[in-house]
Length: 315
Image 1: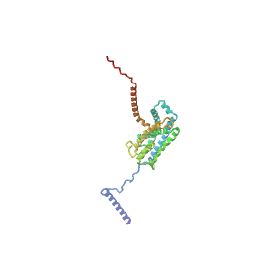
Image 2: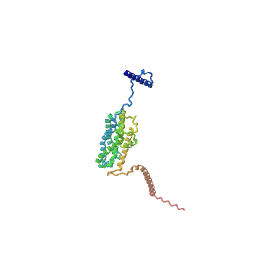
Image 3: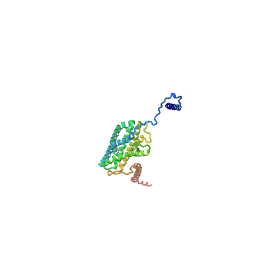
Image 4: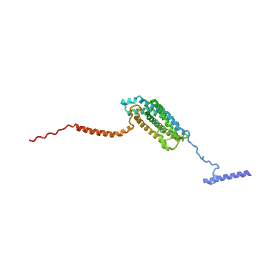
């Protein structure tokens, strides 16, 4: 009797529960509803791959290592030309300064461009499979060009080719270690836009941040495309733009430092030589005015003296 009463109580409880659910769902009778119900799990499963949190810094480190040898080669070649007086001989022989620097950019730029294309071809299929291939190549190529110009800007500080080949790549590698300031538990910190933009004036930092941003999109099986390149507080487009800015900035800095830092080779120019272009028009105008007045004075001095004719005698 006790068991039957317990069973009957259980049945009444389930019927009451079904009736309550029916009323809550707006149904009519309990016979139209099934006894079992399926509800969604409160927390949906995550689709983010934790590996890609570390993929950005890892890719940055690999590409950085692949550029250490070209950076050392550029520094050694540039400083060795100063040591051997080869550049002075070429310039004295009639080679234009612009043609000389253009030849350096083309010859060394081809090596850096080859490294960038090979690195992107090997890394992109495995780490950036969902991202647009053109964006991946653009990131790698801009980093390679900015790194080359960074090496050009370091060369005027050295007078020994061997020392430049040792210290230059080390300085280039150390600039990438600032990435630890923007990383926590293996993932890139959000925000700090101004600090990231300032750190991205170093080419290695700009590439690290761009690769990490791209890796976060890859972790969610999305990738970065031209439609999403501007998304986020510090998007991939910011890293690309800053790498392009670094290329121009360090190229101009290399030209300036090469002119004002002689290091025992040639004659150093004034630190304000860039202002000569502004002073030249005024100087030329003043010189032309002075030359014109001097020529007019000489013309007056050299003019033949014409004596007046004597008046005819009157009869």
